[in-house]
Length: 195
Image (cartoon, rainbow, N blue to C red; front, side, top):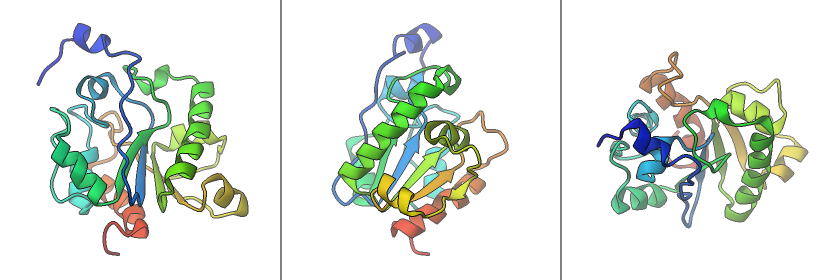
């Protein structure tokens, strides 16, 4: 599947439905949909994005989802059956995450906390530590599991919170193997894969 730049631009501002079902254990959170993602209706869908290869390598999925063409109903059912969900901090599609304002990220962070309260995943994994810092005003946050505090337990409805690397092809110092390792840790805590 291929799109021209003009075809992709037509998806600017579009939203992609959250992937969530009963028995949600692990919620992955992207920054916002890219234009390709909006075009095919599948989170993390750009051809250079390594999210689905990393999920498969970590054992979170039983196979690699064809992100370029977009998820099938069977792909969605597979993720939901595994207890995996996907949403975004900001719902509107842009060509680059750098087009988002800090205010949008903060608003998205508040929306995400309401989403977590409604759906009650065991673990929330936010892909992109810089976006995490901006959305939640935590300038000192680093990759990995975030500190459990009474405040965080209340803000996240008891869910464990992780900041994981962004799988975008623009994040050049990550590989499928390093992403798989980073995603396996929260997946194990959520009980999606064995420890």
